[in-house]
Length: 494
Length: 64
Image (cartoon, rainbow over all chains, first blue to last red; front, side, top):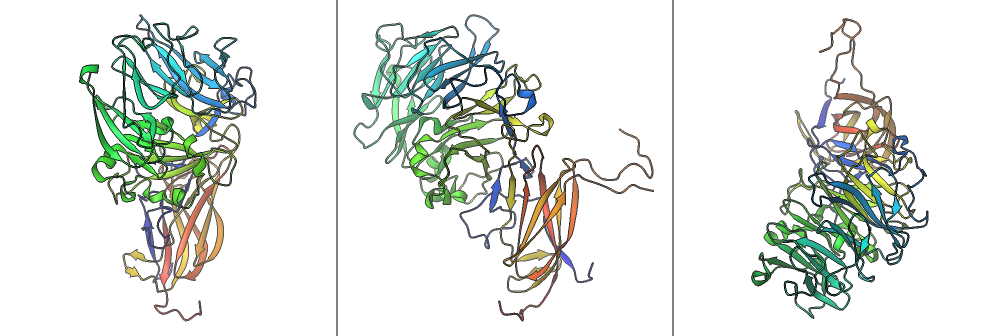
């Protein structure tokens, strides 16, 4: 080492993806590429978990075609999937996965790794209708898609509303106060109906009712949150956007108040409710209810400010944003949305926001990364508790992705599962630093105008196995590449 | 806790290590680094990095 040599160190590296700022002005902690990584609690950048086909052959971690893994055909779209737990009159619940694929409704009992049509005639809508919703209500799963007559699954068979009239055609529903609130009505776009208490099939009786939300404001009701601190939040869109709080415990005390304007929601499934906040993806970015109410619907308050180029520069396909859907993963501390990158043919980018590390206030650090699946097209997905098909992880929350080949992928696979692949295909984790021009070291600051004689790079890492990563250094505009061994080592003492 | 055997056991944490790449040398004003890991079922977890350098001319002589 030269006696004049010094070093510039970024360890720990505490920063997330920022593609909205010029890479020469960013703090060195930030990243200008964060593909297929997740952030751990200390800010570490770790390769994201993999996915494998949900099937009886899951342990093989291959692109399984095991019997029962394909619903309808390899040309069918998985339009919706959810986790169905039913207690009935017992303290021992049963678990099933329910999916709408192609024009049929499927279940996976156990869930043991195989799918079966609920009935031979369980047809529902069409493959091309991706605005499909499944909601748990009254010990049943309610299936709706804004076009087809809604129906329920009670754990045994498909049942229509059996009290009074059939439900009207609606887009989606939420279960609140023992009632089904349903909206996106094909005949009344700004109306919400609710059923009688303790009977989701009674939509016309004396205890049922309806109310409208700013009829004729140029928008329709697109989504409603899960119950959040005793209220439902109603989101209108897709043109202008507005948010309303519905409070009250009985029909006589229901009250509505507008709490925000702008940031129009585009799809009910892009609205995510967590225990501490409500998040949504709009035509302009990603937002949270807490920051929107406090700081307004202006760009500096968007959670997506560091990745705003995705919207502003059309990096994600605007015409398909109404197909985007979101998820909350409680053990990875992320909320995310699946979107369609411009110039590609499939929905396979997951925009992931780590809310545990991020400061949601305007100007606060945000930890975003983009998961880009290999060979996937995900119109739907959900975080579900793992069933018996994977005994090593039964009960763990896993991110499941629907595909356009009639299969569902089971996520949260790591190296211990031999699962850092996407249905058997490799994927690449990439991180890139900003362009670092100002070097702070124990010898002061080397200005950006001064030359530096670079003498090497040190990588701090967690040893993971007998393999390596590629390391590229771009000095001014000249690039050179080498490899970094990730095997880990040390010197014997003696 | 496992025994430590002289001349056999390895010093170093099981969940942290560092790798030196002294071959990455050049002169310039700025540097940008990128790590890629695309192997099938291969992991990556990075904590941070250091860049070794020697301060050079305050006023560069080359024509950029």
